[in-house]
Structure formats: structure tokens, C-alpha cells
Image 1 (cartoon, rainbow, N blue to C red):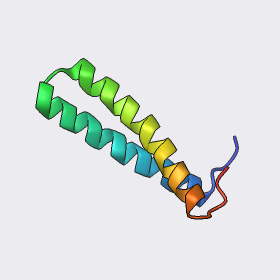
Image 2 (image 1 turned 120 degrees about the horizontal axis):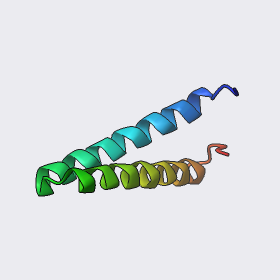
Image 3 (image 1 turned 90 degrees about the horizontal axis):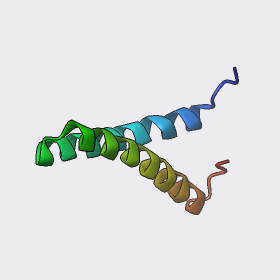
Length: 63
């Protein structure tokens, strides 16, 4: 198994935090667990790509 670099771990962790916040917010608004799970997953994926784009714009070498 390949080891992840520190920057990759931080990106994955931050995207998980973003997705968890999206899931929590949707759970508080609608109270439906299926919507909360879907929004958590979507929030993680969208947060990951937003973080990658922001780091690339800032000039960091992200693969």
C-alpha cells in the first residue's frame, strides 16, 4: 500500500470536515438521514475538488 504524503492527508481530512458539515446541516434542516448521507458524500467530493483547485491556483504542486 502506498503511503500518502502529508499534504494529501490534509486535503482528504479537510474535505471530510467540509462534507461532514454539509451532512450535519442538511440533517438539521430536513431531518432525513438519506438526504444527510447523500449531502455528506457530495460535500466530501465537492470539497476535495475545491481544495485541489484552490491549491493549484495558489501555486502548490498538487497531483
